[in-house]
Amino acid sequence: MRTDRRDNPTWGSPHIQAELAKLGIEVSDSTVRKYRPRTRKPPSQNWRTFLKNHASDIVAIDFFVVPTVTFKLLYVFVVLVHDRRRIVHFNVTASPSAQWAGQQVVEAFPYNTAPGYLLRDRDRIYGTDFARRVSSMGIEQVVTAYRSPWQNVYALHCTSSVLFGRTSAGRRLSEKERNAKQSLGVCYSCKRDRPKAALRTIGLRGW
Image (cartoon, rainbow, N blue to C red):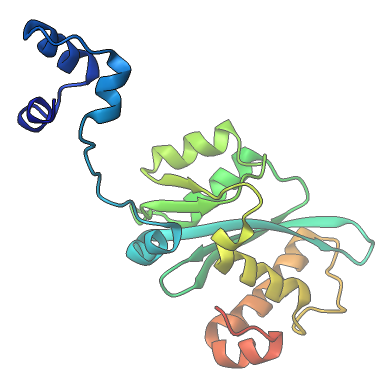
């Protein structure tokens, strides 16, 4: 049995059982499966290894909600490059949709600059229209596991810095999307142009 398996690594249990029957050896299929040598597969990379190996080709996206001065809600979409943890695009809307989110990815990576992987959570906003648009750009979606926000930690830190950092804490945004986008743009520019000072301001050390 071991010899057959070693000489013919593509044979399955039924094939080995049939060959043994030709030699007059009657064994059950379960016996062959139990005693045949196992083929060792190379270990697969874990999540952290994947992020490290493909950091230069990964972008992370995320939605978060901010209140306005009239206590309405605006939705902010952020695109973050992993290798330098840099925000390359963001936009604000009062009515997010899969089509709108897909268009943001297109605007973030024009002229064949699309990354290889797009890291996102399992939010229902990323529907069929979004998947179709991203796929047409040659980007492979990498979806985090259920209840595992740490798998998209850079995007999580980015949104947390806006929601809870002193750069915007205690300050509600304008109801108009354009004005809200300008306010967030100032906040993001601070983090991009003076990252160390921004980290001290928002109390984060991880990104």
